[in-house]
Length: 247
Length: 240
Ligand SMILES: Nc1ncnc2c1ncn2[C@@H]1O[C@H](COP(=O)(O)OP(=O)(O)O)[C@@H](O)[C@H]1O
Ligand SMILES: [Mg+2]
Image (cartoon, rainbow over all chains, first blue to last red; front, side):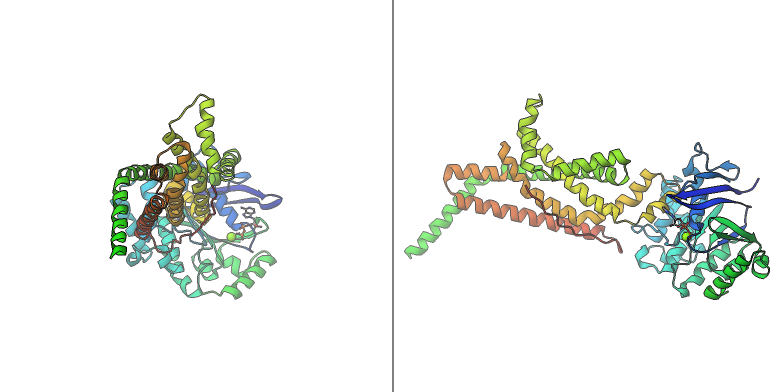
């Protein structure tokens, strides 16, 4: 049984076919990176996995439970699928530690103190112990994103989906976020949409290249960077690497 | 000397008149404050439901809420009061003047409050709702724990505005025989013929009331303020 199984996902917005049959699987502790041109459906694919945008066709399983089944309690499943957003999406009225603990209290029904303790542990893990009582508006972009990661981690998910977690950050703040993500590799499964080629090359077990709503090619970083099967993969990786560098 | 004596006489006369009128004015003031706060509170509850219905309701619910808001905002408060006070008895529901005024003002205030609450709700980036859902919160939990605490804070200045309107608009209740402050004033004036004095006193009472209320809400706003959560000041034009 795969930890995550995504099968033949289709998604149409109006007349645009955004996803046209995407399938892949992931195992416990794996890190996979999705790359591809903008508008190709990468974000849509992540949102199809946790049903924030339910797919029009296709199925998703998490630990053997069909996520796409209408009878599945989606709010239960979502607790096991962390999501980290490009724009952070922190709760602006809550301090960093409350951002992390609120779902523990309200969803997991933990006691206030226990939730707080747990949230502090997660903030320590992402290096933000000292910022616990600050509001999002008082944090830098990199700190906000690390709170976003702590918030996802606190739910003790089996997988975290990252949607371009460093794209909205100033270059000098990207490093801290990537460090945190690297430290999670192996401990928790990660599916990461990113243009950070250094991360893809050094951390990913597999790179998935998406284009026009399908997986054009996938493979381990070595293969993808050194001898991809498709000319298009080589072109895209070359372009991205020169744009974003390799660390 | 003679002039001065006249001045003192006038002043003591005025004070005497004021003291004489005070019990009635206090009765009126009590009703004015009662009308203001009950309408504000019931209007807030109604306004919240309407705003949530408009923003999160399916087409039908959203449409009903929008329709209600438009009808109330598009018709005079006075007409609404007349319908409730004179119209309802024809349908077999007769109401005390005070009850009719409370219902009318609450229904009216609810529509106005709904509009600025909706504005506040919609000013919160949709990403926060998405993030809340991604953590396994139901829509209702997300609204209660994430959206409303922010929307209500953002709404405080508009709410303060509504309170000040309401303080004064409660005076319209005198038309359906509620003896609130203005009605008491009119009553006293009709018996004493001292129109200028009594309405000057009443104007000052309204001024003091609105001043106190604004101060209180300003303090509440400061106390509840959170860095980075902006407030939208929206002065809506209201017509009777
Ligand atoms: N909620 C939506 N409604 C309509 N179109 C959408 C929506 N979300 C995404 N799209 C469209 O789907 C396509 C793929 O978007 P997206 O998944 O964000 O791509 P990527 O993340 O690869 O850049 C885009 O053309 C986008 O305009
Ligand atoms: Mg995207």
